[in-house]
Image (cartoon, each protein chain N blue to C red):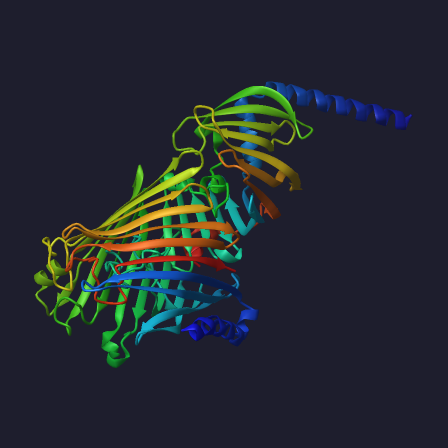
Length: 376
Length: 251
């Protein structure tokens, strides 16, 4: 275990030296070191764990010049496997972007951000922003990337169309027919942003796994005192019963965001997001897979100064009255350097969406992390 | 003789110019001064490089940036320092967009979110990209003249016409010769001082005197100040209109 702690930074340094492109590229290292304390209540036993963990990433970005851009970002994370933490190197981003006179081409491992929403976003039909298995301590909750190719065609200063091809991710079933296709149109109407599009894939989760499904969406964003955003999407499946699939997959997400000045020098921001599945379960269920009709994501962030930030985030399941709650803070004391501390706990009965009792070591009942981060 | 006549002509010219200037200044209204002030700060186009230096009791934080502007409303800022590299802010009339390249995230900011501090500095997004049509946002009153940094200045008081501006009350000291703002005090409606601005160093670009180093102190904080330093400035340069589009923002 101790060896692994030492090996992780060493591996990172070795990786840095392996990349000769770093001489020409802008290199950015994001290093996080944490003390991690976890408590797990299995119902029969309460156990604890204390360790140190590392998250480190190195990004090699091309200079912001010319008509070609590239970015390679590698990270080292501790993965839990066979009762041990194993350092694993993963590719976060690796893409090339080329600008032509009338369109832009992107190919590689990256992300496309469709719709709006910190946690819940029904418009994110390519990556999915509806699951609740996120780390609330992360600054960005949705950062997953995929191997894809996209073409972006501008239609004006604030309008564009975008087409995306995502090859099959599962190499054991990588038939060309499993390719996911997507397209969207982005524009503004008056002071409101309007975005609409669809994804096509050769199977879907809620019905016939060999069927074909098109998932259209529409997303709107504007301001009425507070910033607001709404989105809705559904699956149109073939040869499934269209009405049944539409009903099962229909979802809406909505959010509100506002910021007010508080006291001498502080700001207080509020965000409330919701995910609604009109034909989901509207009564508490005890099965391992939940399809609840309603989830909420409240977030309150208080910055007493420009260096301090305190935040409270929670994912709430009102139908079984359970929640996961995170309270934390960060202190950005020096250039790129900050101290961070977070406590996350589940509050729910066995069988709830967020139960206190946990059967898996990957889902502790409560965890606390204290550490530091430096971007350089 | 020729030399003597030449001297007389020059002296008369100086006197005439001075008299005309005095007459012009005397006839200027507060609104005229503000128009001149806005005109000085509004370029057909501009390109700048600079840094935002924030000092507090723990030390100094520096963020570097490049910016492009067109007319009174359009501007694009790209941060070039390590921690924020590639983050961009695009402001056009009535809209403000942020782009975070690592998350490929395009965020549209409106309303109160514009008042968020930019990169932990004493400068908000509104400060950075504020529209320069001051008279549409403020009632203005000429309070008199004072000397600041050895320069004669008009003292103007602004009272907000709308609730959408960052500072309901402003008091600024405008150079009577160059119309550059040497000093500013930004307050709440009740008169509580929020921020103070002072120009520490100037530069001359295209026959205009412009701020090179501007210090902004947040009066709500102890031991904290931000300096905006321009290291390079070109004005009235040819800029591709594509710069002020989403296509370029997300590039």
